[in-house]
Each structure stands twice: as C-alpha cells, then as structure tokens.
Image (cartoon, rainbow, N blue to C red):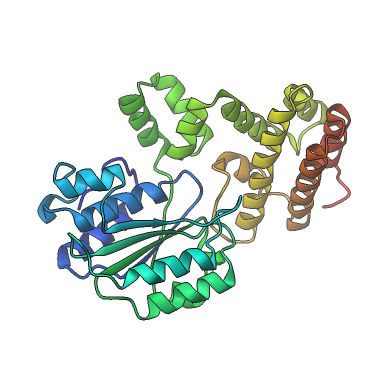
Length: 326
C-alpha cells in the first residue's frame, strides 16, 4: 500500500500497510486531525487501494479502478457528506448510506464509504451510524473523517480503529511544495513554518493572498497579546480598513485561542494550523484563554452586524490586553 501525496505520519502508514498486506482490513477507520492535515487525501488513497486491481502496488494509479476512483466515478466508493456550515452529518445522510450499504460490490471486493462527520454531528445521526458499524455488511469499509475524535460517540470510537493525523515536518512540507507547485524554496519554508507543516493550509495560503495575510496577522496579534499595547495596535492596523480581512483574522484568532486552551488543558487536538502562536500563549491561564476566545467570538458577531470597524478594532485590542483576568 502506497501513500503518494500524504506526508509524514509514519506510524499511521505502517499500521495501514500491515492490515492491508495481511488481508484483515478494519471495517471502520476514524481519521481525525486539524483542517488541512490530509484526512481526505488519506481516505481517498485508502479507498483507491481497496478497489485497486493490482494489490501488490496498490494504489497503482493506472488500472481502470484507480482511474475511476481518481475521477470520483468508481461504483464501489461512496462519499457521504453532512450539510450546513459545519458540515455535520445528518440522519438523512446516514439513512441513505444505510439503504446502500447492503448491496454487493459491483467490481471490487469492498464497498468503501468515506463519511465526513463534520463538526458536531447530530447525536441521532451518530446513533444511526453506530448501528451500521456494530453489524457491518460483508465487505463494507467505513472511513470516518472529523476534526477531533472527542466529538464522536465513545461507542463509535470503540468500534473503529482510530488514527490521529499530524502535519509533517515543515522541511518535508516545504520540499513537497517546491517540487509539486514550483514554489520558491525560501517562500515555501516560510509558509511551512507559519503553518506548522500543515500542507493543506500552506496551499490555501499560497493560492489565496488574503488568507495568507489573515493567518500572518492572527499569529502576530496572538504573539502581541502579552507585549506592550503599541505592538498589538501595530499588528492590527491593516484590519481597520478591510472588513473581510478583519473577519477572517478573527476566525483564525478564535481557533488559536481555542487550541491554546486545549493544549494548556493537556489535550492534543489542533485546528488553527498555527502551532508557534499557540505555544506562545501557553503561559496564560485557562481563564484568560477562555476570555480571549469569548471576546473574539463576540466581536466577530458584532462585525457581522456591521458595527463600526475602527471602533471595534480599538475595543478589541484593549480587550485582548486586559490584565483583569489572570
């Protein structure tokens, strides 16, 4: 089993290779990790390997099954998505999968279902999914994707083989970007360090100048929380005349404060893709990190209601450096 385009995560790869080579592939896998870490890439490669006609080189990429899998038209691979902004899995989506799961595969030895749980999948949907995983149809493999395993029912987790995915080393990610996207080595390494090796976020930043600027500003503002007030105001200055940039920066800051809280509490899940900014906040108390997250969320809601941008930014910077909460 091969993993082209999926970097790092050697223990995960070794475990999947062993299961695939032994012919005892788990009927349920759970891949979790921050956005951009490669959950969809790994799920697609796994599905492609399971339907490939050349098991010794799976996925070979050249057989008819691999070609159809890459095009999204293989009859034995299904992608199940949720709905709404969070992409949360719905009861209706699980119901459709349940109706389909007991059919015999048309070409391969497996029916593969790539299931996007999204954020906060409905409990009713998860319970319905549990019934399917508890008594899986013969030949069915369910690959579950979510940002963090904590949001999945313990009963589902106990019946799935769980893999936490992490970004590769920044140097490896930068090299991939240079080889496959033609990025300047210096710029690629700068992006890799900014995003902590998160290849998905690196490509997003590379393709979207506004996204890259928002990430950079969020990291600078997070680092300036503990410093003198003028440093924070200087970092935030570009937001005063750009409402869209202001909102995107707030979204990234909210994730940074969330990740800092999780790490401070001893957790490991990361969603921001900004490990250096998260690490810089580790000397703040949990109460302070909670307050920073709530402040950021409240300000984003006010921004959506078209409040005065300059006034909001001034109040926000003052709130970020409020030392009243230790």
